[in-house]
Amino acid sequence: MESTKSNKKIISRVFLYLVVIIICLITLYPYFVTICTALKSRAEIFSTSGTVFPIHAIWSNLTDVWSKAPMSSYMLNSILIAGGSTLLAMLCGIPAAYALSRMKFKGQTAFLGFVIVSQMFAPVVLLIGIYKVMMSLHLTNSIVGLIFINAAFNQAFAIWLLRGTFMSISSEMEQAATIDGCNRVQALIKILLPVAAPGIVTALIFVFINAWNEYTVALTLISTDTFKPLTVGINIFNGYNMIEWQYLFAASLYAIVPVVVLFIGIEKNLVGGLTSGGVKG
Image (cartoon, rainbow, N blue to C red; front, side, top):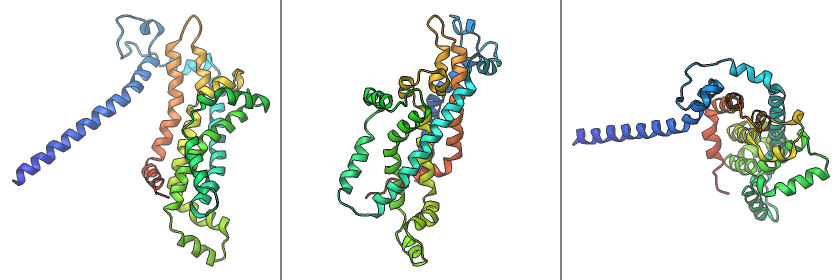
């Protein structure tokens, strides 16, 4: 009887591992194709007898892309937009989430409902309105305009996640800090923020990644090559008469690297941050 149970556990574990491996292979396959295509020549890409693997890997594609397009400018613009959006969203989101988790005021439920509903609207739905507002504020062709837009559309997620994080922290810690002479702001900075670090890091990274990957609004608002982020700038290889797939895929690899590095860096905090945001109010 025991051996039968043991065999069932082994079979179920093997099946689980197989499912996980298959899911990982399906998920990673597009990245594998991207790497292989970035190392091919143009002739090999359009060859009818071509394979996924490059016959002769051309590593120079990864360096030539920097001379064929202003990649450093695109990369810097993306860093400024994503970093500025994240900073602005967190500066507004942390106090708002703290207030929603600790304070009671009229219209609190309605405000929280508005925050959740606003998360349902994709930027593309409001694209015409966004363009008109940005034009009236003279923020088209501006990195500052993209920072404001990305921060606004990621604000709801940051507030929702951070509110749950703060609610999971006992209010007795704040009371103890108040007894020691701290006001609300000091208690938030000295006591709550260090404890809420996993949730804050998780919200920060998700906002950064969303801003880094944003394409539609940037394509609409930015027409000057100097201010284009990486997601829009790499379209330079997508010409009217010819698409340089090897350089397009090589540039895409540079757009993927920061996201991968950030996920590796927050892996330990990611699960804790997401679960802390699931506390019911």
